[in-house]
Length: 284
Length: 301
Image (cartoon, rainbow over all chains, first blue to last red; front, side):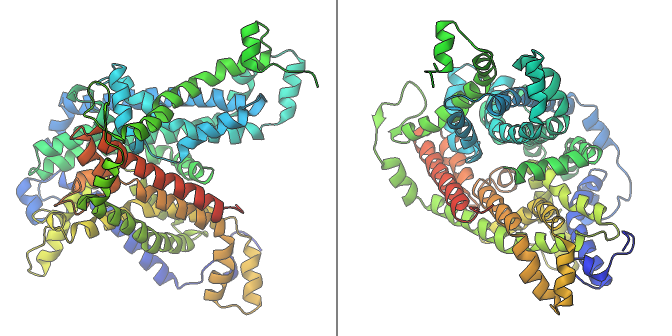
């Protein structure tokens, strides 16, 4: 039996193609219509939006989009989000990879306890401790700074990342480590020159998960930031919606432009993202 | 076996082996950040929850269990608990079957499967805030798609999100829309690991399609289903970001969840003690669920 000619039993369901594609197109429609309507809505005048929220705009009003793209506000939000997510990714990946390396290669009294201690972080969301977290960040003088958002995000992202790294590092052949030790290679050099280069897939996957979480995060920045100039885009878009609440065409254009980088990134790196987000889940 | 000094002791006595060295170099950043920003705040939440405190100075006004008594007597919090229950129910009874059904339709090499998978997964990568605002537009009684559909029948559209009876149902729809793709991807990954010969064998033994599904597919998919249920429940308990752009918990608290309640009654009013009590309840629910579920449902996985 070749791959090109699937036997009727190869599929988990036998179903008429009409029915199969009927269902698939229906669901795809429900998923896509709000998204497409949002992007198109940004091209409409407010009056047209009221009578024609679904369809193509009668006259394409580019100024909604150009106005936002020409404003410093949009770029500032994107910049803030990028800085916060970038710092979060770098710190999370570095701290988690180092810790996971120790848990895999160094046996010492209390190692299991420390690992379980870190993995407790998988069990509950940041929301549970958000008020004491606010007090702590305030007392450290980090309110209204990037670090006040980054450090808590790193701390809450560590558990998942340590787990992913540990599972991957463990699968690397142990002979490598023995050979390197005999050749006089120390732990730190082994980590840097052997473990990390061999772990590119999991580094990319983890980085993507952490980046997406930070890029989309709302609660922690909402609590820690009060100055508009530091807002990442989820906060900024809520403020924008509050200001232009009845000008849905502007709000829709703004939503489209803020979501666009994520959609583009999704299609560019979809293998990593799908594998990352679902693998991150299944290994958790 | 000779006495082995623990690493920290050897560090103190100046004889640091390479093992202790790397542990002392590599572990502290993660442990420090986790302790400072996760473990300690969680402990402090338990401590603060027994105080009446506005966040300034140090907590001195000890009130015992009063914050918890107030909480459970509070109407809005009971609505929040009910809503969280409702969200869990819809996630399990509507979202997961839908995800499994679509996964079954897409698991094998049908034409266009990759494209459909990507489309269905797209809402999941969208930020909750953006998804919430998009649906706020969809539900808008004046401009939205719902208004348009109602208009076709010549009826004035209801303002779904402004109606205390309907708002939570509107939100449930958004939740299914946002998250079914994630669960579908889990199921597809699970389905691809099932040996196809089993389907053939079952078929040759005369099993009907439904029998194959219920006796072969579902049992073999067990670990994936249990995992997906786990994420659906834990995610439902924590729901916050999606509610804020839609209703912020209103109208008249009808769409509160535990976390939006924590935000509106604890954070915005700076009632640190009361808010911490909400956090503690949330923590206990999450951890009790996670432990029990792992012990009971996932013990063989």
